[in-house]
Image 1: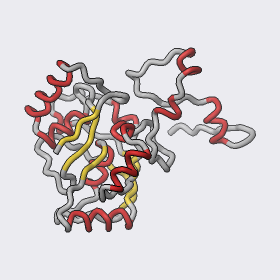
Image 2 (image 1 turned 45 degrees about the horizontal axis):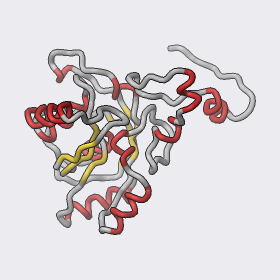
Image 3 (image 1 turned 180 degrees about the horizontal axis):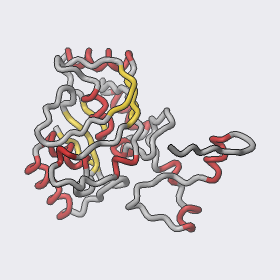
Image 4 (image 1 turned 180 degrees about the vertical axis):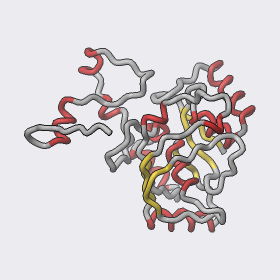
Length: 221
């Protein structure tokens, strides 16, 4: 075990903010000039983020603005917040021939009692539960028991969703277009079927959709 000790003057988080850089995915390239002119600290962040801890933004959420959330609310669409701190493991490709041997990195998550109650109530009424991004989907599925009830939880999530998984809570999802050989691509394939997802991706390539973090999104129902 290696112990690291920081010696500093002032507020530690402020020092990190002043000298640190936004932890962008490795496929987003920035030169020193770009860093001075592009404000990733603002654009690479969801409007509803409230907790510190993730190493990357849940990119499906980047499509939402406060105005859009207000419009959804005016239509009677309820939104509930859950937290999963995205870890570096989300960028790691699957390198094993048998995907069942892949091990997900654990990520810290929390789901409040209020949020769980709202989700259970909506589910009981027959409303659809739509996960915004793979992080929300994994949090919801990890926190749902075999009877379809979700409960307040706080801990570490290492759920790996791949084809063959039986979804217990999520009825639809909004997600971006993901990298090949990624756990995220396997998650959406589990939800919609691999053949369907491959056809969707072929269409996206043909129509020149934008992939990855700052790319386009799709709604899978």
